[in-house]
Image (cartoon, rainbow, N blue to C red; front, side, top):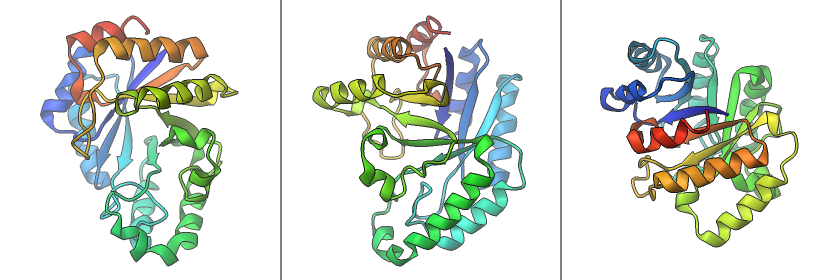
Length: 241
């Protein structure tokens, strides 16, 4: 199984965790600009030379790429992305600032067209992170969290953040996914994200999730996030490499 990582806060302390990793991997580095990303990529590769770095663009105000982002911010971001050859993470979520939904309500279709055009043009180097509910929810597809474009898709199954009843439903749905070669599963969380209140997954529960994902036939997982790595997590992860 191939195991990759997100890093939402690519400071020196978090990127140093790459020293734990002695297997080939990719890291999705969150940054507000290509310049910032390239600086972080350089630091990351100083810890692991064979690392593949992908750019996770952070958008002003909305944070994640959304149909409710400012149109000008989307255009600026996508123009920047055309200047690099790195793989890209398109994190399809609702804006972190919920006021953006009302502010840009009438930009919905224009933004959808802009995002879809960019994704279709660059689909071979894009990974889309999207809620696991998009497997069975047409509503999430309608609001722009699944564009039904043949990119690599990673379903965000952060089991530590979900009630047991919901986790059981998600596991059942994941087991029914066809063509698993084109999908990965995002697992975690092993460190807090931008929300700051995410529940942390124990190393034992991470092993259970990895075992389930492997038994389903998925070949890749992306763990949120690198900064949470420690010896206990690494011992578990290395069982699945």
